[in-house]
Length: 86
Image 1: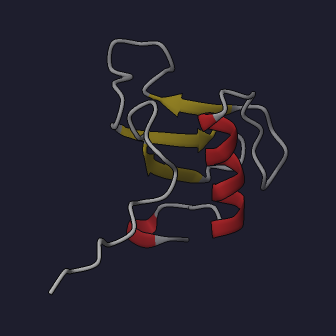
Image 2 (image 1 turned 30 degrees about the vertical axis):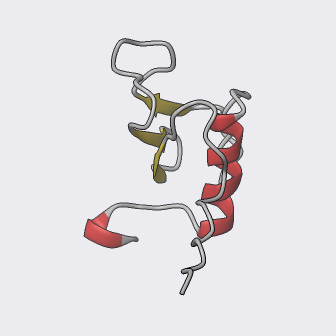
């Protein structure tokens, strides 16, 4: 059980599932192998705005992962801090 009594994926499992979602590949639960993973908001819906909260939930084992979907075209990693000029 994770925070707030919600059954969450372990970090490596969540990363695999999130990567599959970002690449728009079929979602398969890395914990139980089920294809019953639901995405909220549904991809392509009006609520599926870039840079919004995405929830991935397995209907079979009940595990969930939540992440913030970045706007299209943004780099994967945050920018490095810029050096201060003295």
